[in-house]
Length: 267
Image (cartoon, rainbow, N blue to C red):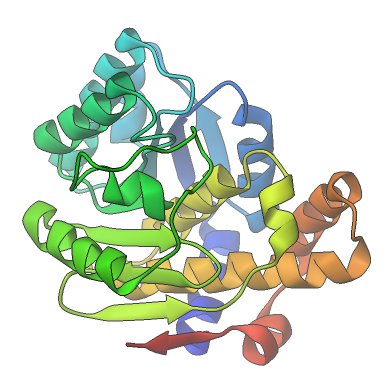
């Protein structure tokens, strides 16, 4: 996994893939800066008049429902169909799914009309898509990654033919057949708005240069992102300066940091 993470990181830096984001107002600037730091080229485009054209030339497409509007869902589906037609990875972040019917129903609609490559969310968000018993408070996860969540994730991955990537104290990533855990990260990540959305964008960057099998590249993205947070927490223990240090570390971290810190294992 460490070798793959190094290879993909270097490809991102050399190829500078275009990552098309239809994302929320809260995180647009933060997400763009994270993508620039890792070496990718971000674009934020949500108008129906251009999303199909933009998605067609991108290396990957990020769909993030954080500040949801009906028109944006239509744009997401339009862009996603263009990406699907070209075989471009589509990474979906179901922000706050389970909090309201609008959010949950919108994610289900997107997943029914598109081929999603990676679905990345916290345990509550992911579990809300397979049961009506979950209620979450927006982006906060009310669940820990448990055996029940793991089995639900595997089942959903098989049903939707996509990778399910669940963020938590220990991350869980599966395609329904093979599964991995990642133990990188730091609690300060939960104190900075948009950190999860940034992870979704980094996953898209890794997938954009990875070829057809996206499970291990997704695991590598989780590990790299989490270890950058660990390093940054050593620079600052306060959220404002941690956020700055985090982007700096994403920019500067490389083979040495990956080889010494990445913690991913097969389950």
